[in-house]
Image 1 (cartoon, rainbow over the protein chains, first blue to last red):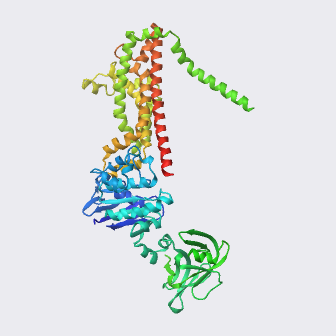
Image 2 (image 1 turned 135 degrees about the vertical axis):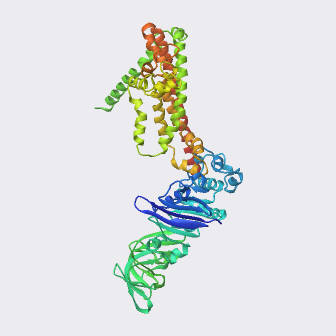
Length: 341
Length: 275
């Protein structure tokens, strides 16, 4: 598999985009809107020339600001799927897919299930179908690199679920270095085996999804993976555990060694709920239930500063309603501490 | 004021405005019997003017499209310092009095004008001939097309142009396959307006090209000439003008109606497809 290497330094309105990335598989870059993710794709595709940077696919150098190399977009072997797909509205599905293709597109149309839509125009097909056309068009161009900008953002929830797994399969099958940009961590994890968190133009952490969950580089990465974050002050305690006094005044313990100001990271699936005041053993925080959300056989319980994710049967047994005062429990072993900078 | 009284007032005001605008046009078509008008249309004065008008308008229109379209595309897709000044300079002839435009052309391209000497050395003479009429028409009507074309190209989603580039298309293919077809409706509208304005051009033409029958005398100049000598001929040409410009406007309206009905049907289909 070819290796794409990218180095970019470019001032944006509120911060400077500074990124270095090497990839030979599918990488999902996740981060809040305006973090510089789309700008990175524009730099790779040649739609934006950065102040400084280098983009190379193996030995093909597309951009090297020091050597004054800057190939125009049409001479870079990039397949870019735009947010909202940017399909040509005046062309049929077949004409869209064939636009950049050096060969007949019948096989590509069939592979993406578009043969029966070939004579339709983009305005006449559904969102999921448009996404397939955009991907087929990018792949038919025979690119060396695939770039996808928020490929699922414009789809409704129902369509998104089926398109997401189909997209993950397709991207894995192409065997191309691929960057998928998304603001949704769940989408990133479902699509790519490697996830990078980009915040204010910097790549905070790049790793497998499990690594981001078990060992987040900072509080932002932790919160992006859906973890609970509590602020506190840490000091060494008994039994090899660190003692933390939370901002709310409660005392908890953690297996992570740390001292000073810390962010306490606990994942919702590690938090349980009890109606007892303070059972002995694990960390306990008394709080009021503010909301209950059911999804996929589990219930997310928002209680004080924490979110707990419980099996539906357990939530039903507790008969929780908003306003209940409960105790949120979590084990010191699953309580991680990140030193605040 | 009661609702009924307001409605009556609005109706009256509208009727007066409409009558005021329609009455002179109707008078032009009804002042002389139709066979008298048709007789005049076959006179030498009218046929000569019609030929000059059609020839020069066609040449000017071709020049406007050929040079104005790339200019409009560049101005719509590029951002540079001084762009607003360039656009203002382009729009200036639209608001300039035609006589000023004529004098401007004379001192720029006339025999004693700024570029007159250079043009003469090339063996080209642009004073008081058809070339002068073409220049006058292009100068006055061109900006109308360019302005509309800038708006039409500006309305094309820039991501579509970027998508074309990332699909391996160079700037030329992107222009001809994506930008031009998507802006076609607006360009056609701009072209029709420019054509109508060019056919009616009078002031700049008479100042720069003169009014020589069969050479530089266009239909509007022929009306002016015939007004003193043969009112029926002036009326016949005017009636002809009404028909020609109405045809241009109608085709413009029909094109935009066709475009909007096509996009409406596409939106409807998309709604049904996604539901």
